[in-house]
Length: 259
Image 1 (cartoon, rainbow, N blue to C red):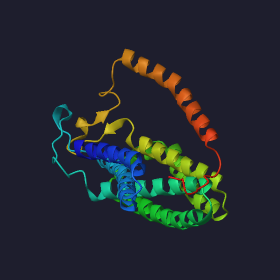
Image 2 (image 1 turned 45 degrees about the vertical axis):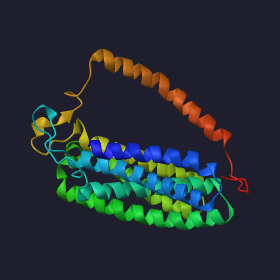
Image 3 (image 1 turned 90 degrees about the horizontal axis):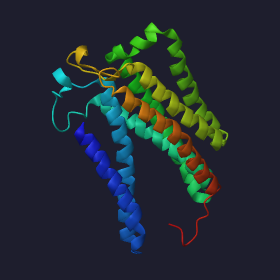
């Protein structure tokens, strides 16, 4: 999986460069070029995150000592991984468009409303196809649900959260739509965790080569240190983002000096 992660890193660098260099010159072609770089980089970052997730769900050809036995370059681009990439991209597009509707007005707001409808349709279609493919071709991921039926509440709640987003958008209740879109992401991540537990990486060669939370765990001391860091750092990080969004609350006013 080095290739998708290296591509992910490269597109993050390009995205940061686009933000930095776009405003250094006033030529129209210069700004258009960096706008394109920024857009492509943002799309590919979201898509590659989904591709990696698709590979994790589908499994890797892991052999003895957890050594990788698959192809070198683009073997990670399986149909399922690509579909998961598109689903993740559609979900991020929906989340981003809803947030921007809270921050914009005028023609840009109207254009975002149109794009949001397309993004939601895109997500529903790709998510439906990915779910069907998972149930038919990767049935082992449902083992934890069959063993513990209470876990079926998670996909049900995920479906209800997804269905509620278009309803709230149609009523122009964008803040609530953003909350339910975020809840959708939370439930989908919980769904992945339940599907995989206790496995981290599935071996398509033999289940005995699976990477699990047990054979991949660090020492008790290291785990304790990391838990302490998380317990202290998470509230600080949450507080920072609350302060950030409170500071920049409200609509963005565009004028001739706007970025």
